[in-house]
Length: 326
Length: 291
Image 1 (cartoon, each protein chain N blue to C red):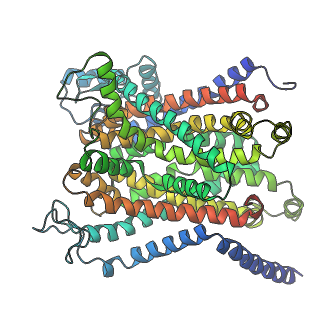
Image 2: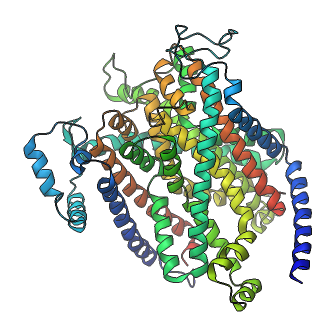
Image 3: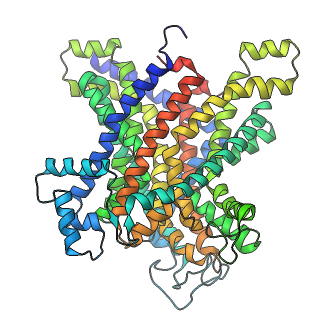
């Protein structure tokens, strides 16, 4: 610990670093609106007929007839007040629409990453136990495939196998439309709908985590404290799972955190395959409906969650491994 | 004197290139990847000769299952030949993947080299920009940009290239930081060479190896991103692409599995090929890391 910052100072420093990023995100969003071809009102409205009073209010609120710096100021002020515009396709404010869908996306992402962490760790440890054995080669070949298959195609393949050919699991949506469930039955119903999308989204990260765990385990297993534990006659299984795995777990936690933006993109694609009513599906529909306020709102809110998740991951990392706080 | 130095370095370079190939060849997966990439490139080049039909032309033979001699991989709902679509799709995917990755790496090299070499304020500004572009989810931003500014192959290449450079910039910057205090750079400065010459003809050649590894992995990423945009219905409407075919297949999963299976296989093989080549190059460049 000596020489390293106390944790709260580290957190404060990281929070300050996040501010310019947030400003940058706002500026990028503003530039997209300002540079998009056509009247900025159309960009802020999507291709929907809006009452002229609302158009006039938009022009005034966003200062569309004023110089660029006024517009940027107005835009930032609007966003800070939670005003991301209005979706005429859904007839609701964009913020409400996105936040409503975010829960479903997080449910899918959370389930998938738990699955990925468990399966990836298991696969990685088993591979590292006997490097270059058939089991190891098989697991690593699988992880190579997992890293190259696009999530949305894997999703379609899972639908073809488990929904169309075998008829075991539902292919679309988050709950059954034919029957109303309540309580535990409703949760189980959502769970059944969650299985295939979670498999599709997690496969890539099972592959990634298995590769990282294997490498970390191979490195850890040569270190002194493992050799010492073995010399003390500690049971080999205990050495592997307790001493080895504990040290390999840090990179796994950070891999999930730092890949959040990619996982989110994967989720958007998987949601589209399975009709999962999350942010990704919202994006897909917004493109079809030319509902630009929703597109821009999703981009903004999703970017902000990336900043937050990166922050939390950094802090977690610094907490687990004090050497990071230089 | 200068000529003899060049002769000597030229000699060692060609020798190290042969050593490099020997190390690369030892890795069977890397060779398989190279084979895949070459085979797909050949398909892309010869697409007009290989494809039995115009991939866009519709016919009355709709939703034919694969296995017939007229349509070995079947047809889609509009009677378009899947095999021809997959073949022409190879051309689009590789073209976009390679040119977009090249754009990204080029931008990354320039920004990373300038940041690493000059340091200070320039470095700080470029690195903040890099962080910003690594934070905003690339796929969502690409989606919004294409939706707002219009589709088309050239635009796709530009968008993917303009969004994918941060990794290359970070890598090149790191390499420049470790190189710029070495004696040969001091010597070049003492000779009074201008900054851009030191950057591009003195330092850059020494740091290119890891950049080439990254470029290969970037092609895989760019192919994936292009396919993802196509799947979201944002591909170039005037050409056949694998992602676009999968977008179309989504509506026919219950009736025509072949509309999904074959184009997806194309994407997976292309991505796998470039990933394997990247991994293989990496192992061959850093033989010590490979136990």
